[in-house]
Length: 196
Image (cartoon, rainbow, N blue to C red; front, side, top):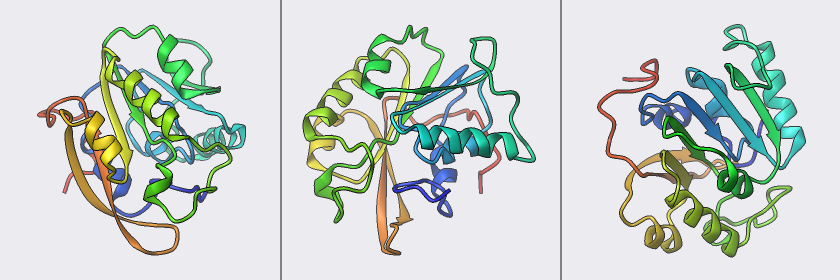
């Protein structure tokens, strides 16, 4: 499934997965095309969330049809996958974190970083980006955030570890993806399949 801002591009999902330390619960609150969830080694519990029910349905279908489908799709905490149609910020503010989670956020990129501002069915205002970043900074677990560089993110995540890597836009232009992390570079990975 081609999804605006999707991470299916060569080297993109690999670069992100190669920064993920071991974790028990994986949470992707802006599921979109689900490239990271579909390509990473599953955690004990994997939660995908999006306001777009079509994105959730497509990711569920892609997982179910995969030759190496990573276990049953489940609606409980005993393992597998849970998919929720809903608002990411509200979910993150109310989820009962235990510390063993990894949250990977790939929100709609800020409008001032892209040429097309109505790319997604559900866009985010600058105020919503601010609320998201404030929420993420308070989570008692590992957090990763994708985006293009902005002063807005740089100021609010100034003390987070970052990496940059090349990616292609939908129009075929080269862009630089940024990945902000609230943890030091990992010495152990959750998934070693994409090293090299």
